[in-house]
Length: 246
Image 1 (cartoon, one colour):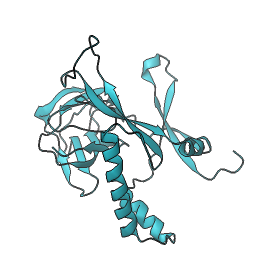
Image 2 (tube, one colour; image 1 turned 180 degrees about the vertical axis):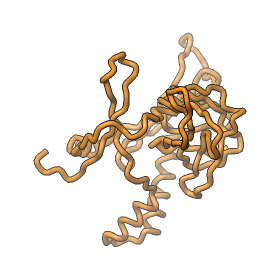
Image 3 (cartoon, helix red, strand yellow; image 1 turned 135 degrees about the vertical axis):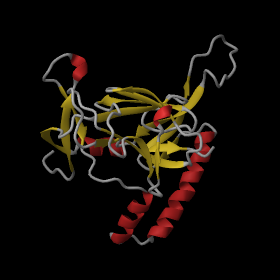
Image 4 (cartoon, one colour; image 1 turned 90 degrees about the vertical axis):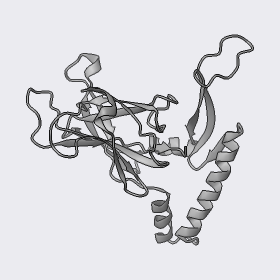
């Protein structure tokens, strides 16, 4: 990697599951969040012969076609990955039928060779322990089994991490979902939080949650010591969670 073009920063967190006090795991620091509109605007600013509006329109057309093909069993290479359907659940007997209470479909994504090659060439700077021990590792959609991908209105969601117990009396504590397009924030009522522990949360997704893409944030004053934090701290899952129309 003599000519490194891209680089990221990694922060370290305690890896409690190994039993060793000095074991750590790393997370890439998220420096910015971009959507298709942001990318189209950047392309236009860099001299694209197509305007941002035309680029977005083209992407929307291609995305719609890709969805149609995937929905009928196609494997589609689109952008930086190949997408296809995966079957979840166990079938009993050679003539078993589809049972929505036991079986589901989810999306499998395979990164393109181009993307894999790029990842191997990224430079990494490890800058030590993260300033906060609070971290969200994953959000699992109970209805589909998908991890860090989606939420189902009216369904359950399991959050795993460290230091995420919702505790304290300051304003704004709890689980929130921010729509990445509109900026609207939906707060999850505490009476729908079924599990509230330092390493895991479980909650019911609002049944009327509008379709869109969301960022999940947990805000708390929880501390592993006997006293609460004076100021709340927050952690936002780096993955965007999709809510489909219902």
